[in-house]
Amino acid sequence: MTNAAGDDSNYLVGLNLIDRRVVVVGGGTVAQRRLGLLVASGADVHVVAREATPAVEGMATGGQLTLELRDYADGDLDGAWYAIACTDEPATNAAVVAEAERRRIFCVRADSAREGTAVTPASATYDGMSLGILAGGDHRRSAAVRTALVEALQSGAVTDSAERPAAGVALVGGGPGDPDLISVRGRRLLAHADVVVADRLAPPELLAELAPHVEVVDAAKIPYGRAMAQEAINAALIDNAKAGKFVVRLKGGDPFVFGRGYEELEACAAAGVPVTVVPGITSAISVPSAAGIPVTHRGVTHEFVVVSGHVAPDHPDSLVDWSALARLKGTIVLLMAVERIAAFADVLVEGGRPAETPATVIQEGTLRTQRVLRADLATVAARVQEEGIRPPAIVVIGPVAGFSVDAG
Ligand SMILES: C[S@@+](CC[C@H](N)C(=O)[O-])C[C@H]1O[C@@H](n2cnc3c(N)ncnc32)[C@H](O)[C@@H]1O
Image (cartoon, rainbow, N blue to C red; front, side, top):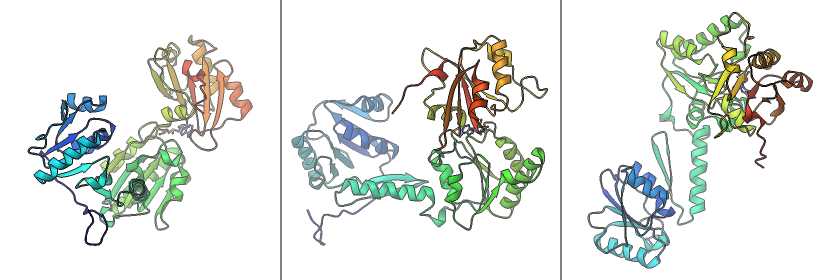
């Protein structure tokens, strides 16, 4: 059917389906793709299908919808507000549409959109908004525009001024370095920052994307000693937030993994500044992963321990029980350990870890400059020196560090 303009463009509408009966005829992958959103919208979903995918069955056993494994029969749309015909039999889909037409229920026909009375837009949700795109039946076009729009919102290229966050601080984990590995929420908040206080390991490409008016404070360049620098960082967060600005504290990895993030949270809280914590992908797991090393593997290791190497094993400030670590059979992930790798390897071997235990070092993981050095506990210190490995680097020790399947 065409409209007054002579085309088949549809009227886009948002349905309130909460507790309203929606009947889906068909239980295959096409149905599966629609069901998640229907359930999330609060609809009372009933699926009638000869067969269903394990995922659809799982939603039924999980109580998210009802599933009747049988043929569609006229009358199944009784009481429905909305229907979807998505079997792989055109005749059944046509019968569902015909019943819907008779009962004046809007009905999507998945195999032949024009035969139905409704179509499903390419959709997305973004920070409490629902986006829907229809492109006159050109699904690739609608999906492409939807994806581009979501990416533009995430990167800040398209902004909703009503969305501007209130004054305060967001403690954002930027991930291990590749700018694509920040969370969606982190990227969104970054796009709305007035001030960004960035760590040395915060992904630099994310800073390059910021609008010119955004003030960037490079925390690595704050000219004080270590303890004073932290106070100066805290002051930068608090003073800017109190001046009415939205401040993003952008850190490498996750803010709470050897990142002093909790100290900053405490300082802001003590000053009455509201803080949002946005978790990040920690380098402790993602850097090995990017180098093809799983920190756990079934039947090989049932534990992984993440250890800071910022002080030597015999340093009075060390809180690490190295002899206990030496007795582990699983994976040890060392951060900030490159300078003292000889001392760590020695103490582990002295404590009983076999000298031939694989030890792999990954420098600048997830970045284009990533380097991977494979060794064992006996050789790792000498190899690190020979190869000129520099921080930031991660050392993975244990059987998994010897894994080397080329993922292609
Ligand atoms: C102060 S810690 C911060 C860790 C961070 N909060 C996290 O969750 O990844 C810095 C250490 O993390 C490790 N690191 C961070 N990013 C890395 C990367 N891209 N490649 C290798 N090691 C990295 C290095 O061991 C570095 O010395």
